[in-house]
Amino acid sequence: MSSVLYDVPGPKAVARNRVLGVVTILVVLGIIGFFVWRLADTGQFTAQKWSAFTYTNVWAQIGEATMRTIAAFVVAALGALALGFVLAIGRLSDHKWVRWPFTAVIEVFRAIPVLVFMFLLYYGFPVLGIRMEPYWAVVIALICYNGSVLAEVIRAGVESLPSGQAEAGYAVGLRKAGVMRLVLLPQAIRAMMPVIIAQLVVTLKDTALGFIITYPELLFYAKYIGAQPSVGSPIIPATIIVGAIYIALCLLLSYVATLVEKRLRRSPRVGQVAAPVQPPQQGGTDTALIVAQRGGPAI
Amino acid sequence: MGVITDNLDVWSEALGGTLLLFFAGGALALVLGLIVGAMRVSPVPIARGVGTFYVSAIRNTPLTLVFFAFVFALPPLLGLRLTGDVSLTLGICALGIYTATYVAEAIRSGVNTVPVGQAEAARALGLGFGQVMTLVVLPQAFRSVIPPMMSVFIALLKNTTVAAGFSIVNLGSVRNYLSERGENAFVVILWVMVIFVALVLLLSWLQRTLENRWRVAR
Picture 1: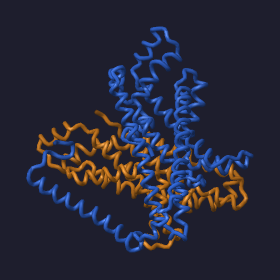
Picture 2: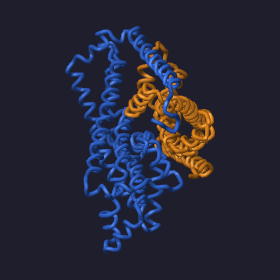
Picture 3: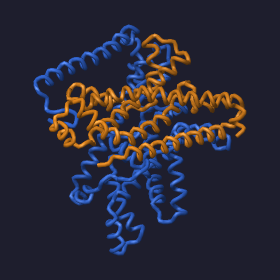
Picture 4: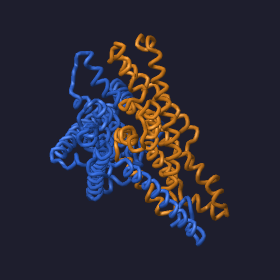
């Protein structure tokens, strides 16, 4: 195998690579060994530290906390997709007076950290007399942020289509709405599917921010159970368990996403259309956004 | 405006905290990301595997959980007392380790955009490994790494606010301090938003400038 960085290795390079491989293994083993030693030394492997997780009640509550995480994610994801379409179509409008406010909204929402937006909803709005549950603060903030990111993704997808697509649509007598709904959006969504899914994984991860504004999701429960002296304050076991649940949820979502994507690609009706779509080659931050997100999820 | 001018001490400390988290976390992320990115494109299969595992594990972990693990779970493990400086250091580590995965991905995809033919041509001319890297591959890879790297740093700037949930002073925690002084929380948070929009616009402008200066000409 030849790559940009190295040629097919000869005998010397093979020997050097083996040495490097052994060194890598040793470093990784060293790091793992250090943590295992610290875990053992501070008594994290004792039965008492894990005793909390032998109760059915604790697991039932972990289950409930997981459901609350998922409840926030599902509503936020659906809302973000809906808002994303609205904002994208608004920004793609032919009228300047429609396009301009939508552009401003998208740019502002993208620039504000999600957590600060949650603070505004949860701590700021009561000053104006609007009180809401932490759940709604989490969900609304996630919808606004992810919706505006998705709007940019969808817009980039539409703009990446060859102009002949829209022209052909108009030529067969479709109106603007028809061209958008029947011709442009289906192709754009298919082309941008990986990025959209990646953004949904980001949404799932960001539900954990609810912990900071006291939404009782998984992390919140980990903190709670980790501070119970009656079961030995098992903060480290709780972190390990909750971390495993989060990673599993995200991997599951990514896996479902790949399945959906493969299905879309296999479908014979779309194979020819979706293939030639290239990511947009334009200046500015949109390119950067897409480039960053094609490699994986945004942060 | 009074909210800012009356409490300049809190605001300057908070802005300093955000910038410290941003620059220190960014520096750590760059160093770690370079190492992991190099591992992911190296000819050593084990190093590639370790790099891939690290990137996919951290990428599927919420940043809040990384902070949680560093600030709450690590101190008892290492026997640290949780003082202000310790939680600041741990917060910087959490940000750096989380962002490093994105830096590594940006570097990896940047290197992968250089056509293999470029390196093959360079090798055919008789250039050694160092020359191929410094004269042919890295200058091209650098140009395509710049835009995604700046996006990573914009995201890092916004992510610094997560530290507010772990009693590390930054712009996200201004509300805490100022509500004790009886300031209007709504106005305070609006000002925080304005500052973030300004900082992000600044970084976007820098991104555009750098992108134009080092445009890929292929």
